[in-house]
Image 1 (cartoon, rainbow, N blue to C red):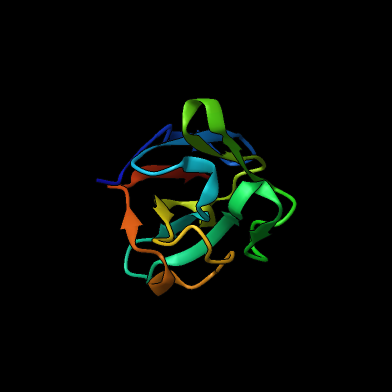
Image 2 (cartoon, one colour):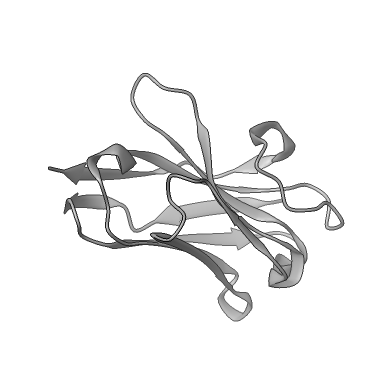
Length: 126
């Protein structure tokens, strides 16, 4: 059974940094595409970042490129989202997600991710 548990959210001032963590269980961790998504109040959930099988490639939303970094620690079964130069527009609930098949490629599409965590709140004050 696949479980994803996020942590690391909180309240931070604009310009600050946070590192989100997502611990995964179920399956050989580094074989699956992992993604981060976020949902602001009153808005749809949107893609933030993703990392491919065996960490060959990464993808980022234009709005976070150059500020956020996704990475994976295979030994800890954990994927991270390092968020720097945070802006009030980054406020939202951040979700970790995993694709269902080890051979699927990296994706920005929400519906292509099968497993989701419960989310962690990030609030950036101005």
